[in-house]
Image 1 (cartoon, one colour):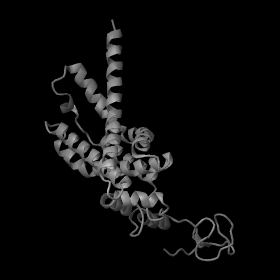
Image 2 (cartoon, rainbow, N blue to C red; image 1 turned 135 degrees about the horizontal axis):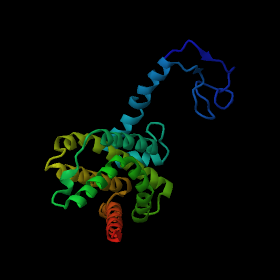
Image 3 (cartoon, rainbow, N blue to C red; image 1 turned 180 degrees about the vertical axis):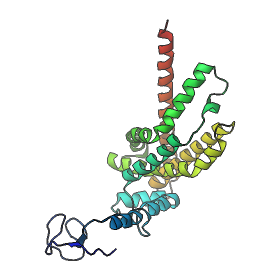
Image 4 (cartoon, rainbow, N blue to C red; image 1 turned 90 degrees about the vertical axis):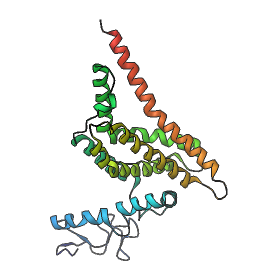
Amino acid sequence: MTNPHPIAHAGTCANCDTALRGAFCHQCGQRGEVHRLTLPHLLHEIPHAIFHVDRGLLVTIRALALHPGRTINAYLDGHRIRYFNPLSMLVLLAGLCALVYSKFPFDYAPMAAGLPAKEAAETVAFVKTLMVNYSLGLMVQLPIVALLSRWFMGGQRSYGEHLAINAFIFAFMCVINLAWMPVHMIANGGAWMPLALLGSGLLFLAYQTFALWDTFRTPGRPFGPLLRALLTVFGYMAIPMLVGLAAGIAMAMQAGAKP
């Protein structure tokens, strides 16, 4: 987009003051020609950041859908300009999921069918809290799952790289969640609601297992990485179970303490 108000910097980079040798600064990578920000310019940049044909959010989503292992390994090995930052991608998509869950009037009563009234109300409130705080939950789980994957998948990659690996996987799980959202909305409040939630959960676990296996698989030895991926996923599944168990024990102790 052409801007009639360029900022003059006399052949130096506006970001780091390095002498320019071309269209981009060789020191920090910023474009040499910088313009004053205007509202049309900012609006123009938004779709470029998200829908860029060669790089950006949609390219990264497509790559993670088709070739998660190849994409993740390429990013870890330095091919980063084409792909969205994994943590930024996770925060953006998890936040979008949390927004939908908080704004749409989901009815989780079928999740507590058959329970006494008080326990049913507590269960519904607990499930709703988990859904509304979806993004926070993923960010809390991320460092734990990174530890699990580094433990089970081997130490070839650093802990920081395992954070990036699982951030990419979690981010695509958010894409699956958003794509499955119409099913949740159709089943909302009905007897099919638990099955709809179960279906999305199975899709999450299937993709997580496949992505980990695809990232760490070696030619001629497919079963070792698959077993380690399954162990990582089972460890991940244990986290919400332990949280739910701890919450249940806490509520039971609180109820028992009342006269």
